[in-house]
Amino acid sequence: MPPTKKSPDGGRLSNIVAEARRYREQLEKTYRERALKLFPPICGRCGREFSGKRLRELTVHHKDHNHDHNPPDGSNWELLCLYCHDNEHSRLAVAEAYDTSAPDRERDTDFDNKPFAGLDKLLQPKK
Image (cartoon, rainbow, N blue to C red; front, side, top):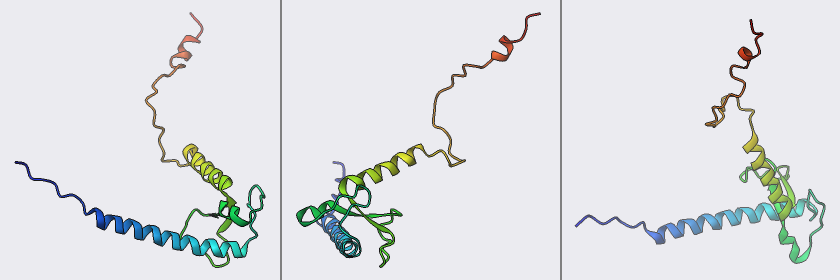
């Protein structure tokens, strides 16, 4: 009979994940509350105003995309509505996908067709 694999301790893993989520929520709560005190409840992109229950649709965007960089003056934050925040991150993902500025980046392609190969010989005047 083959040896059985030990199953990971699901309870321990669940506790670790739950603790990490609580920590992230606490961190987000603190900088979100500070951002809402520093800035008016208006989306920095589309200009929509938020109040009451709709205030939860206003998110804190980290300008440098580092969620651990939370200066007390709020210089790394801007308030964005859910839609503008999603758009901001989508635009960043698209820009990174099309980034060709890295000189060491090679094009991943299996395309070997060279349509103009030998054209110089074809264009030579016949003797």
